[in-house]
Length: 392
Image (cartoon, rainbow, N blue to C red; front, side):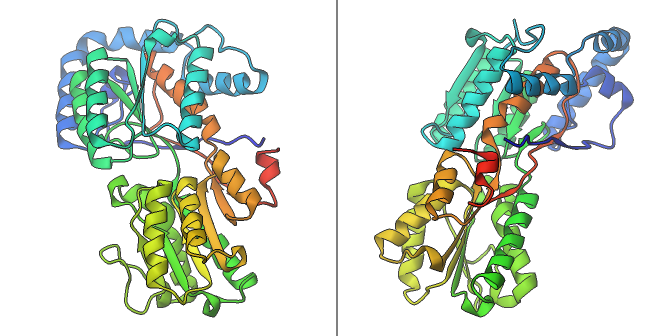
């Protein structure tokens, strides 16, 4: 399988040199509360500890870059990380859901790399939120009580993540976000703009080359879940920008309304689960009984499966009349591609997430810098190249 690559993003430009030495794993927070807390910490510790920490950092080998190389070798050769760098350290992972391919695969890869790095199961706290805020709050309290060195956060409510970020700075717990940002802490996962750009460009070519042009398109649905925040929305809204640039105002949209007058675009209110997507698309199809050629942009493979289920239930599914596009290419996404339901899927490679996250977590544990942004290198995966990445 083709290896995915890291696309680092240079973090914060304005930062005291002394602060970088003292807190090499911290990124300057973006919220007011976080900034005040970090500033106080730097002021209290800089004079006494600068020389000692420089010496320790220079001597320890567990930088993010070095650990990433260990992770890559581990994947290729099925061998442990040299030196068992995670031994004696503590980690927490809070997952959105279990029982769905993408989230299951991400968690399995995190656990795999934690153990291969020498981490103990007793020092790893695994919690699942069941996509419910009340459960997420309870789990967060458990994590605060355990006080791990690093908390890997995978949750779809950007506002809740921001609140936990503030408290985590106060508690001295370092966080790493997966796919949905956590203010003031590193981010690992999807480059939503790039994913959306790839999807939009591919869709324009398909509409022109396969369907014969824009006039053949009757309806476009784009999944939009405001709770996940504006960053995640880019994966389905950027394609609409590209369609509008190519075809004009009949591809226009406004996030304040479901459909702009005169536009073929409908924004789909769905949380990314099969049931929510099926319900939303059942209503859209009922409201558009004459729509035949339909384009659907979905935030994940679970939602894409819900769209197909809605169309089949209403007797509106003919594969040639649908351009179904998805994000993730997890096990379900691969099945949807092979069955012909999904035409194109943006690869996220969830089976590799742990090979980025565990090196980032361990780097912080050894007071080394963690990149502010750690991104997957995305590709468009279709039936034509699926076996190159996921051979049967």
